[in-house]
Length: 118
Image (cartoon, rainbow, N blue to C red; front, side):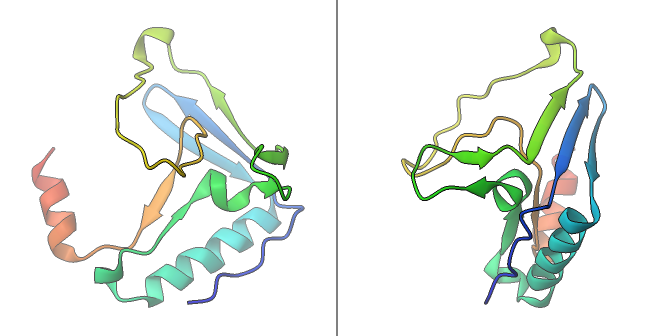
């Protein structure tokens, strides 16, 4: 499944508050995300295609040193005591970005299991 091309003018601010995450973006970022969400919506839900917002919108150079154009950034307005740094196991090839917003297309059964976890 081909992924749409990123317009490097895409910019987004992920704004964290204690009870909400807001995404402020320009047209290029929103258009790209809409294409990504449409791509995963058209896939079979058991394939679990996803889009990681910060990773998808970041401009990378050819090295592994990370983004050269920080066109996606996080403003964290949560109280210091509310920030939780988890102890999750991560793949060795994972790129660490801090807070992330991810969309994934899943089956109704997966959604039901998540609802019951509340």
